[in-house]
Structure formats: C-alpha cells, structure tokens
Length: 267
Image: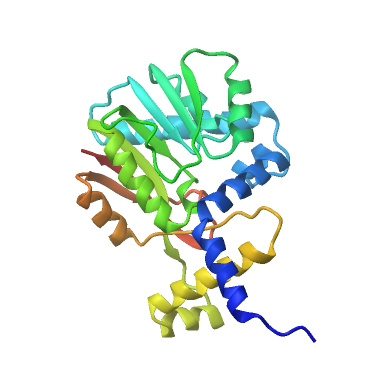
C-alpha cells in the first residue's frame, strides 16, 4: 500500500491556487481551441458566424440604450472590450466608437478576433496574460465594457481588474461591468450548509475543492465566481469610482444558479 502523502497533496493544492491566473489562461486557451463560439456563448453547441456576431450587435444596442436612459454624456473616442474573445462585442462597439481595443487572456481567441476584424484599422486586439492592465496608462479610455468575463475569474483577480478599470478610465468616462453576487437559495444539503456554515468556512471549502480540481482535472473547465454586491460597491468607492447605476442582470449571462448584477461607473 502506498502511504498517503497528505502534506504533498496540500502543497500541490496550494501551488495550484497560487498560480490560478496561469490556470485561468490554460483553461480558456483549451476552451478556445475546443470551439471559441461555444466557449463564449454556451447555449448552443454550434454557431453560424452571422448568428453569433448578431448577438453582439443586439447586446451593444441594448447596452447603449440603457446608458442613454441614464442621461450621461458619452464620449465616443476610445473604448475597451475586456475579455473580448473573438470580437463578438468589439466589432459591434466599433459602430459607435472611434477606436476599439479588445483584450483577452487566450492567444487562440485573439487570433480569431484578428481574423474576424478583417484588417480594420479601427479595431486593435491585445493579448494580456497578467493579473493587471499595466499595458494601459491611467485615464486612457472613454468607455470600458466587460460582460460574462469576470464571472469566470477568481475574486482576488477580478477585484484587481475592477481597480484597474477605474484607474485606466478617463475622468467622466463610463465603465460597465457584469458580475455575479451570490448563489440563489437552493433546497437540500447545500442550502443548509450555506445557512449553518460561516462564510469564511464556505470560502475555504470552495478554495480547497477548486484546488483539488486544478490538481486532478486535466481538461479545461469554466469556473464560476461572484463577489457580494456590497463588497463591489465598497470597492468602487474606495478606488475613486462613482457608481451611477446597479441593475440585476435578468438575462442568462451568468449561470442560472447565480444572482448577477450590472454596474455602471464613472469617476
């Protein structure tokens, strides 16, 4: 019998969580290679190009209609699409802004985005595999948008990205981002555990479970994470952001088991 090397396992789990940003890149590169359209919009296994990019056109139309309803002036200079994938939203935003930059963690996604851009000099795609946005100067962007991206990023990184969004946003620019807040109440053992166990214990269990999956699962996986709405609001305020609007995202952007919100921010 091989003795249980528990300490070795703990070290492997801790190492897996420590390099989580690398695991995130590895996961999304694997998902992109397996089919970028389905990795971005999982409600269909197969997408035709026209139908896939049409969803971006409709989403951006609804987004800017919502922004107009806030009666906030919008400078249409430089915009950022964070987690751009193959450019589903970047290309749609190009109809409204002078110049677009799309950023993604996956080389395959960026390669696909450049292909679909068709050589346009209005759109630029950049690979960023860091846990910050140091590639951009402070006060650079008039508009920043990210949807169904931060929900797949561990909170310690998504918090940092939110701080970075505010840093690179121009004064009186607009930032719109979507992020789940908490899991919806469910019946059964998991619901009882969430009521009985303190939040730090639940977080520790999720970290250990995620670490074990990182150690023992070779195939790419799509993580789901959230940050409580109160914490997001505090994070925005602490970084000189001004929260203009918070709405519950009723569209199926996050998994249906999560309560998700869309935040509109300026500074």
